[in-house]
Image (tube, rainbow, N blue to C red; front, top):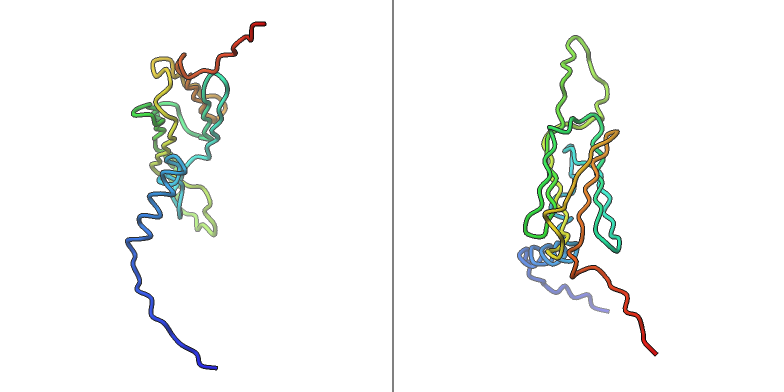
Length: 145
């Protein structure tokens, strides 16, 4: 039996295209997911008959350090989690808390009522409600006999 080694040309650009397609399929969620030591809030994204709800865990943050914006069919949640306590004279053996700027972008679509988007912040959880436009909401049709 003879072993044959065939050469295969490495084309990194193909993986860039694959990444773009995966990003498109995931609806914008791949671009901003946390990596490494960066802080990024955990996010839940749900749909109801009348709209969408996005909730983000932001423990220890102040509402004024968080910005919410809806543009071009995407919900943008940005902000900065600050380490406000400087602890001198300590040698840390483990640091698991994460600080810094973050950005989460959720692709929702344009068939929403952007004027009625509202956000609330309670007990470290940001909740954003994005109502669907009237035309996008399901309507039950009565069957006549």
